Length: 379
Image 1: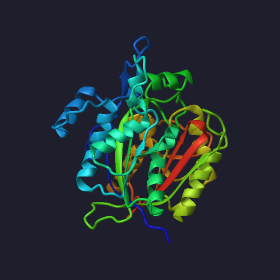
Image 2 (image 1 turned 120 degrees about the vertical axis):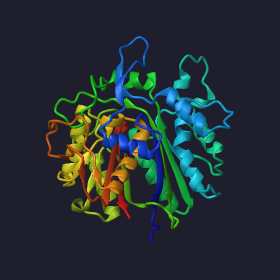
Image 3 (image 1 turned 135 degrees about the vertical axis):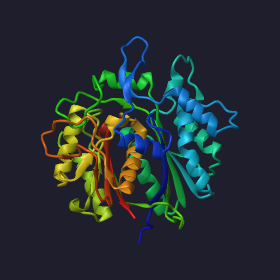
């Protein structure tokens, strides 16, 4: 029999706050981090979700008073997200450090004639891990926008395989000219605040955030909460380098596999935290996949209207918010949704409502045909 794996602690650093409580309270008030930001000098401002650099530096200097090392914006975000967890859970010889990111310190490339060492994801992971005294070699999960969900899966499977006793999963990406230019080249950037699944959606808003979670097979008795990682799966549909499958094959297979492992039926799922990027084809693909799994009546939201698309951090951040929803017994509306814009029926959450949430389905999809799903149970 496989070991039972639990998420027992987490934290997030976003434009809406640097703690779980500040983020949750902001979400309850309907606040969004999405606003106009000037990111590329010779181009107009874009709608994006960006952490205030002055506030970030102020909080970093408050928490890390003995800091003598130079850190990038992304590194400060990652350190702040992980600090509260490391304080409560000791790092041992058998503790895994798992970093989820798509671009890492990509901003270091700007105006550089040579490749700086810090731009390598391995060096970024080592820097954060060394700061907190991790003894195992860092593991990096960088698989486009499913990275954050897959990082949870990697932790679960490696602990079950006996490779590690516990794991700290950390995820982060920052806004950069490189990322904005890339998505803009696909004509995927929205003209206003994004509207997942809405008839008038026209693209994504890029966001930035960092998130961290502690995962273990041996939770202590004094944990404030436990969420069991019941099932997971990642499937690549090999459809297109950037376009999602029109039939939802990869996402459908990921959800089916995760729910099969979890031994949970479609009727038992209480809430779906979907990817919901607000691009024309992604949202349609998701609707098809959810209907193929008979999940069209399950309450569903996308957090992209609040946080934008945080790339490698999105899957972990949104998993954390979904667990907060379960702890508070509250379903949050899918922000900016007004009129159904996909061909298949979905139960999009339109207003804040109370609900008993036990089983959560979290999904993600990304470039290259990658898809991932994880089923969580509130214990």
